[in-house]
Length: 297
Image (cartoon, rainbow, N blue to C red; front, top):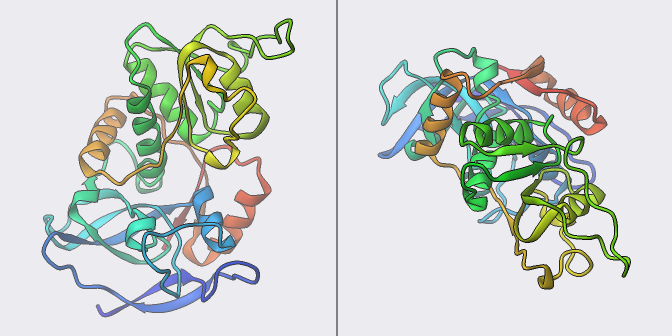
């Protein structure tokens, strides 16, 4: 086992095209795990990679294999061979992509797969689940607090809603916690929610911010839509914070166990062959997908 099939691009930005590549399989060293990929979820971050709108910690290495989420079987390294696992590839740090037959990752990014989920369902958990979990940690809300989630039907919003409920937090949605009307000065009046989690950006991010009470808390997963000034002023006593999901095997293990306890719901919209990765990205780009698109090698 020295080579593998992967879907990769030889350039990013205009003209980037995913096509089949034959690439070497990296043998694991101490502290790493070699995983045979059984399923890989497709995320908006993958679109950003190909568009050239993404930042890596190190200089980009080509060909680029996208993909943040994998579920699969351990083939070697610092886990028992044959173990069913899930992992976030931590692409911005590792430049390891899930659109491949194998991935070699730091063992600290790997967790045992939920026993009650199939491969495609398990692959939906890592990136969205870690983002939701770390967003709630940043918000640090006490049981009984109210949290507005402005995109509860997407993967991050759904996981955040379910995790918040498990923590005893009352979750509001745009249907139940609309932003308040403007005050006499024309500025949106302070809302009543203790906090808001923005997973959408744009006008809905501003509406979520306006729905938070003065002195409340606000976290966004879409930093490019955070614009200083206007509603995002310091005089409301709210410090907007950005969540960037970091790979964390121990946290991922807690998410997997929450899934086993029925606290998290994995939703797969469509399963495609690995060679259909470009089609999956086109579907994601077109919008309207409810649930995750998942690639199967």
